[in-house]
Length: 242
Length: 242
DNA sequence: TTGACTTATATGTCTAGACATATAATCGTA
DNA sequence: TACGATTATATGTCTAGACATATAAGTCAA
Image 1 (cartoon, rainbow over the protein chains, first blue to last red):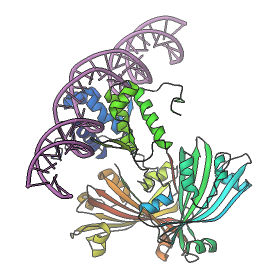
Image 2 (image 1 turned 180 degrees about the vertical axis):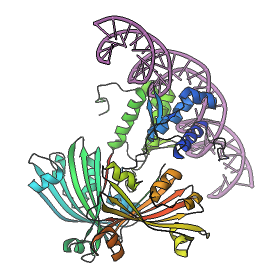
Image 3 (image 1 turned 30 degrees about the vertical axis):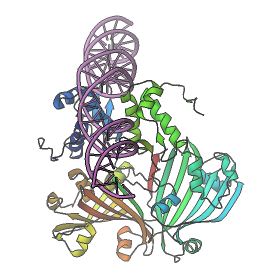
């Protein structure tokens, strides 16, 4: 179970080392917590320099497959099963990347003192000003999503000058404000009449909901709710894993 | 705009190089397509060996921030906004990680020759045997999700011996079969009567749907559809970004 | 037993070279 | 002009060292 390295081509040495270790981890031969061989042991086994095995191990550590501790060694990490990671950024980019015509429509934009509900949604305590934007994105003239967004002006004062009549707020924020953390919540709801009209679907039809909160170093930047037609839109994610 | 490196602490050199470049990319100073300095130029600028800048650039390439091309140089990549990454693995682990009591119930398990519909769903052409499993997951005795899964026995022959009466097929597969690629599709539907009964919700209530296909080196392993009560369950993802 | 000090060691970073390899650019030819 | 061969060059990988640093483990005293 350990001799055969079933590939016949010859990748570089450090990649082979990395793949060997990865396989042992993925097959469970080296379970979580297992201490993988020290660098000097791998150096002996593969007859190479330490930099070569170091590169292999560094990449495994970067991929969170192992954890490296000085003086102690390198250990197989528990797989991060419970956590879900979702990365979606910009609807305009998403649609144009699909080769479809992007359409944008500002439905309302209000600058106001934060209401209690606003403050709750943004998770801030102090009163301040916010911008509330509602808009619609479409792909090839078909409604794609409606967006309901709140921007904390005390975090993003520049946003007061943006009117979002042509550029969607998501794109604007992406280019003007670097974020450090985001949280997504996905759920499903039934379309109410207002939503149904905006998305051109029937009342009672299912909608996919994505709520996203974005922070920069513990400061809320924006909270956004995106509503997609549930039976037509699909959020596709493809990735490599282990 | 280029002198100050606002940090006062002294990280290692390659990390400083990496951070310097990353900052220029993220601020847009070096836009997508921009050719960043050659390794030998960075070597001159930072007065270090090539291996040091190579390590910095390799990590940036691994993070998909830059693309490296032999003879041509390293180029800032377009941000991968359009792509979504979703990582969900094991419902049992997910529920126990939340500190809730996990419950599992096998509703049906059938071993059969693959029907046309099965083959289509799995994306395979040859006839073969499959296992079809329907089961229910619950958290603290409340229905959490129903699972409808197809396993390709020609890819996972060992699965024939597993009866899934106690262990959910997702967990079993996770521990027995390493996968290399997965694709998720998220959508929303209205609960039909069978689903409504299994999830203990009203007919017509919204459901969150996750379809997942898993491959190992171009071979389909399994196709699974998970149905969650749309208004109660929430798929939460929190992550750091840049 | 506990706490403080010392030591051994695995990883972290770095160097100054080397050769391999893919490919952009150039040049020559049909 | 179009195509094929050559060359220059930036990256890819690797070596055999070096010193730095965090820390597990051992030592010794209170």
